[in-house]
Image (cartoon, rainbow, N blue to C red; front, top):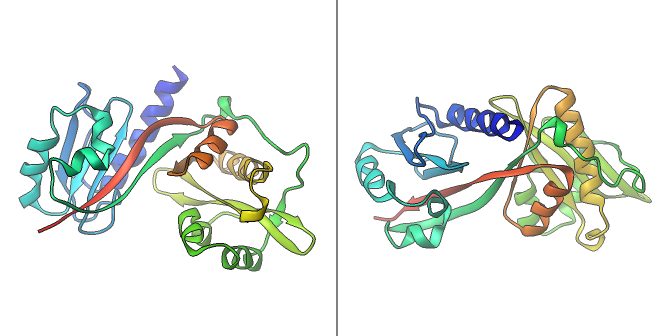
Amino acid sequence: MACDVLLARARQVWLEMAGVPMAFPADSDVDVAVSTGSWLCPPGWIGIVALGDAAIVTVPAGGWAGVVREVLQGLPVEVLTDSDRLGAVLPVAEVLGPASLAYLDEGDYRPAGLDTVDVVPGEPADLARLLAAVPADDADECGLADITSRAFVVRRGDHVVAAAGYRRWPGRVAHMCVLTAPNHRGRGLARAVASVAAADGMANHLLPQWRARPEPSRRVAQALGFRQLGAQLSIRIGT
């Protein structure tokens, strides 16, 4: 029952992000709609979100709606966020993702790492230094530059080596953002800072959301009690 409630709440978030009236079909199918203001994907792209056994898809223009609907309906839901499989049936020019989507129910929350790691509030300058010290891809992927919450950090001497926070999304979501310096990974620091950030989000009556592509990031979410409920994929159609 708790998983059903969590799935329903997660789906409601993405329905709001779609920007137009949509629904996750009850018969393991996909709903396709035109939405020029969709937050499921970058402007001009096709956004696909699969949660549970159903999916929603937004397209940027009416001309593509019928084609995408015809191609995607009848495909297994797990295929809808598989870029290789979609590339075989659509003229895909560019891909973002797929990224797993995991959510945390307060009853599933498992604090981690706080018995051995001291997590303290951070300052914007702390985040700026950490982001500048990692590869650009890591800095972009983590999303820490855009958090709206406080930052929670681990320091080693004068250096911040791990940080977490969240960006508040529509639908009362705390979108988790976590980063550990490369030479301090594998020590439980991501779990510790993310644990505090997730607890802060729930204390503010928000739904923690963990969106990830790398497997190590998914393992951190799982350790804290997040349930993977689906995936998100954005594609740009070529001409």
